[in-house]
Image 1 (cartoon, helix red, strand yellow):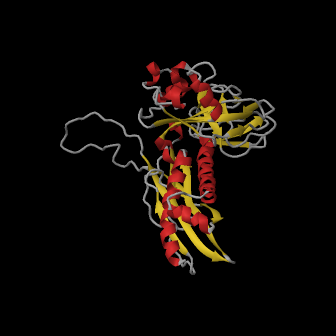
Image 2 (cartoon, helix red, strand yellow; image 1 turned 135 degrees about the vertical axis):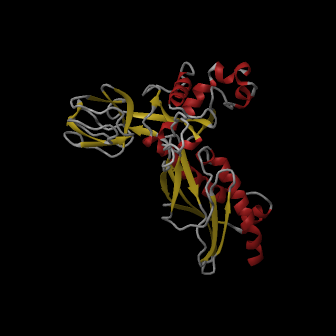
Image 3 (cartoon, rainbow, N blue to C red; image 1 turned 45 degrees about the horizontal axis):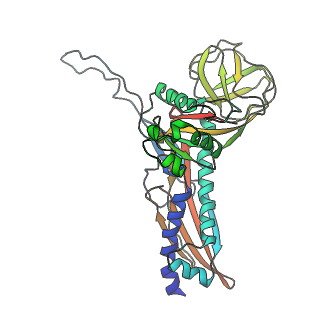
Length: 378
């Protein structure tokens, strides 16, 4: 038995990584270039954010000038490795032989797919941190044209987002509409025939396109009253007191303020009425009081969301769990260089059977919200 396990564990890990990579969309698209050191649950990783520099005119002098960039301290976003998920399975003797022959059994494949779907859903949930948007709530993107992609591109361009490493992740309904458009399927637009032959959406309009069944759906708060701002709020403030308004505003709801073109996203559930509302980013224009607040989408509306983003908008960190006493169990880990996911396999003997368990420790966060755009759908 020991010799069999010695042979089967590396095979399971290798096949597991291949299956995980195939079923994980988002981890391959976001920034995951971080050190793969052993870690405990709750460890934090600081992700640096570059700070904008300024330019000064050169004036010859006998002493060096004060450079405004000298004392710039980069901001950081702390990612906590607080997501520790596992999926277990058992193998029969015949299934172990399948592993040794290079085939991953269905039970092991389903365990991996469950982990992949969880990671994908977690990363897609970061849409709730993004205030920038395009599309029409209640209308599936690409219903008639590529407008949603070009509008998302315009927003990223206005936010000075680099032109490289831009992705567009869409749900199956959006992809189906895209594949019906000539701009997506015609070889003269795509550069090859795979769009129409294999249903592949190739790079175009400045994006790499991907379909993800885990693309999220957002439900707006009830927001059934006329919200207005109560009093003065300074430039950069991330909270406002509401003067009037009823219903609720939920995390992820987007609103605008009269006289300010910047969209804002709610960062904490708000009960409505004369209460504070928390949001991000900080105010781009100070308020004087009485400005109307308008929410995007109907009250209690349920809308699909696609995402267009640069890879540096989001960060994903996965690390192998620190070595522990296995108490007789066999524990091995491997790191996928493509997705950055650290996959661990633990084999334990239970009552008259052998239990296999894949587990993953990871964290994720929005690093630069100006580098992503939400695309409303139906």
